[in-house]
Picture: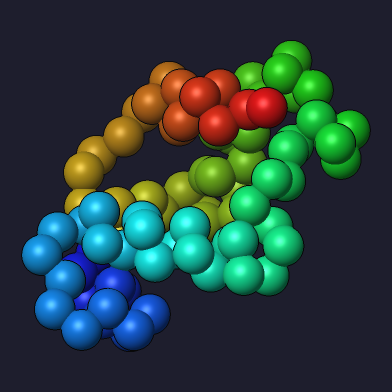
Length: 83
């Protein structure tokens, strides 16, 4: 994440939080900071289908993730992101 922060213009990133902060600034600068899934018709119930899509889109290969994650882990991320 420090490498991604550097690519986004952070001169001396100290942690992954520097990337998150840079990403938040980028989203705000292009008017996307307040986007909500619900504004686009996505329902909380629909989120339950999304973990399976990870396997479809990636062909079942999720080995690029630095930390092994289960479908429940992915669903938790989607649910915490839902607005």
